[in-house]
Image 1 (cartoon, rainbow, N blue to C red):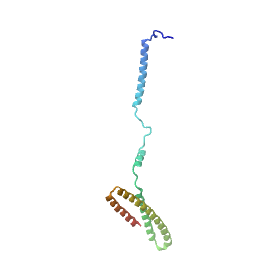
Image 2 (cartoon, rainbow, N blue to C red; image 1 turned 180 degrees about the vertical axis):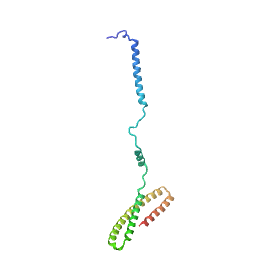
Image 3 (cartoon, rainbow, N blue to C red; image 1 turned 135 degrees about the vertical axis):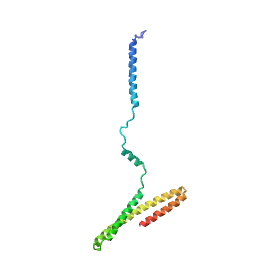
Image 4 (cartoon, rainbow, N blue to C red; image 1 turned 45 degrees about the vertical axis):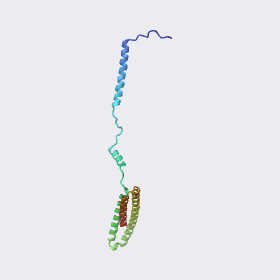
Length: 161
């Protein structure tokens, strides 16, 4: 089979229509793609202020629980001591009941002393670790200052006992 010597004649109007159709399709595709390209990003689930604040709070350094624990234990011990003083002020006629209450308060105070001793041990450990860091860095002036601070802390714990 051979190709005809002359291709079939194409009418110029049909070529023009075909070009217009292709141009129209290209224009539509370009318009649609441009509208997608210009569309701004819409966050499907924006974070609420509460979530953002929680995330920020979680990233912040947390306060040291040791001073808070010490303060709480001291407040509870002071409260127990006030209650013991109130029981001692009761009339002698209620001596049996007073002695029972005092015995319970003494046991609670004893447990508070143990809790304070735990806090004291933790404080000593932290003070020693910081002192060791200063010494390792060769900061002899800071080591001396830290030793003075540690001595003051020990004296204050001794006063509590």
